[in-house]
Image (cartoon, rainbow, N blue to C red; front, top):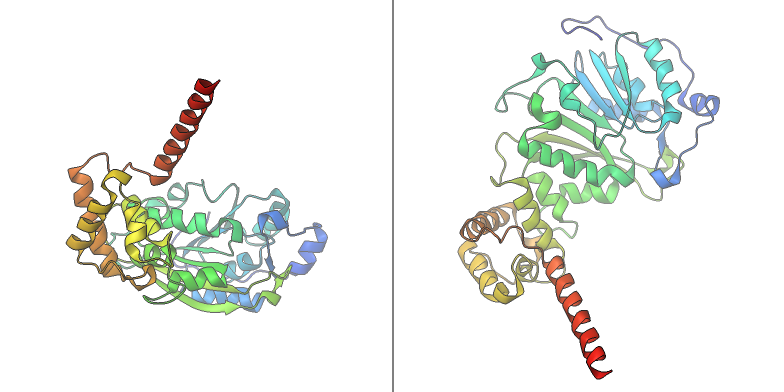
Length: 345
């Protein structure tokens, strides 16, 4: 692989176009995998340009497909580009790029949801969390089907400072359905405000940097696509474990059109729900008639801090899942009805 240090300017030699690569290797987007190819190199160049200065950087690209963004990254004079592609059909075309950029492009056939990027780049790239972001970037035109699970996984990695964030505050530039991009960046009071808004914004500076019209992709998706840039914050706005914050936020937003006390009540077993919800809201100083979208990050911080204290007082509380309780009640009722039927017989 390319050594770190001063690099001379690099440009790819003339190559078949992405459209020609698709024809050459008989590639078709698989609808079940929500694949959409971005063929316009002006747009892939723009994504890479908006990612920041990639000179001498180490870049991890997720889902390169036929290699449009891959070309733009290589032309940005990076030190090393690692691509992880799950679909074997794309490997030959990517290998052609690797041959054209000796020592710069490493191809891994794998799944981004399980790939261990923390072992992929030199340890010398690591920076203290409080320092400027490391010269490591994540870039990807994500398939819609994996975009939300993947960003949730990476946000948890940020909270734990592991995975791609063992190097420090690694920046990410990723594509999402426009609606998801709007949810990620939605402000307090916005109709788009959601679990994603709070989870992302309490851990990162999140910017919806531009929108790509659906017609730029092959096949054309039914929606436009938003390009979103994430820079992890030095200090999270809610200093509690990721799973605790996510549980509180998820419960609040599951009843998005109701008052916030409705979702918060689901944090507690039915027998103590009314009393415990009242205590949580009182101690957190939250108006129970606020809608979920009206709750700010500061509101969620108060709720998470108080919920943490309540969990510390009752060690079984955090493990409580209201869906499991409902399931148990349903099973118990079914058994009771069965016993009554047998008794009547």
